[in-house]
Amino acid sequence: MDITKIIKKENISIIDKKLNWKEAIRLAASPLVEQGYVEKRYPEEIIKNTLEFGPYYILVEDVAFLHVRPEQGVISDQIGILLNKIPVSFSKGDKSKDVKLFITFAAECSENHLEIMQLLAEILGDEDKIKSLLDSVDENEIYNLITNF
Image (cartoon, rainbow, N blue to C red; front, top):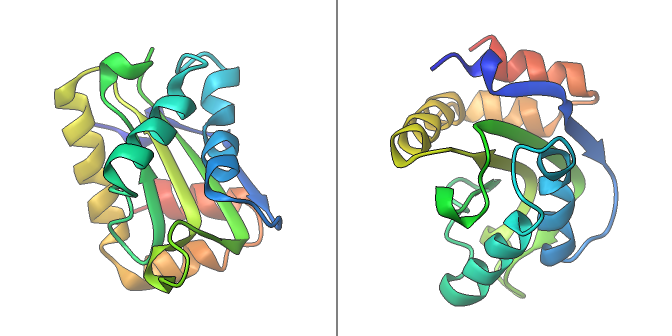
């Protein structure tokens, strides 16, 4: 899968806001909702799953891979990225559950879901790449770091 086909610069944003985890999920998913890649219920499905299963999508320190199953509101494959310079806590007192980089991805089917996860895992398996993403100052920098892997 070609990552440049599933990520657009307009789906990347950098903010510096104090948010709770529900606000962060809604904001991270908003470009995908607004552009029609996911249904309006998509961020609420992520929140519902989080309440039921915990923050299952925090696989790497400071990074959340926000996603749900295709039938939970996905329309087409796409990735959105939100970098918040202020960490968002998913578990009071547990700094390992604080997140700055929110990667929201929508996959039309289970096969694409796994392919996108593998692609992101390759990119973010590099600690230097994660640090560069977290230190990014503009959206173009994030886009280039992700697409020029």
